[in-house]
Length: 236
Image 1: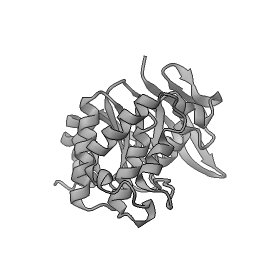
Image 2: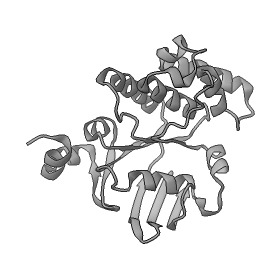
Image 3: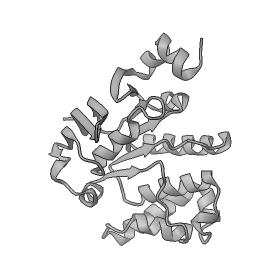
């Protein structure tokens, strides 16, 4: 049984057909990449999984149909979404933002352990524990958003455009963090315009264009695909 499975998922915004029958499955412990241009439907797909938008079709997580599950319960069940907008509390400190990520947890010892894990994963956050989120750089805010998502103790983490607009040195830090999380067995669904970044980390991928999956395969198959190389990786 797949950890997460989408079957024939459609999303409409009025007359706009944003997702047109998306089907994919993510296995436990893998990183699954979804690439495609801006406006292709990547964020809409993640919003549907998280329960933020209405959809037709079926989304199951560990065999549970998510259609009747609230967004809060989805988080409690271990499926955690780090959005492109980051959704930080701007006037809260780094430490306070991280604690907000643990608001649905009852295991205080686990929260303390995960705080130290996040600070070890992102030393910049450790250096800025008392700094307000709004005063941080975009890259530091992205680290904080990922760290806060990790404080929810996810079994599966959905990352939406974690590298967008970031300097290469920050992307390297986030890449190293994802590698560590991957080595520790966390399942990650990674939606990225930065195809090179996605191909570096994902074992399997889908290419979404205009709300439809145009290509599926392994990272090696994507690297070897001429269209992907020319259109998305910039290799000719």
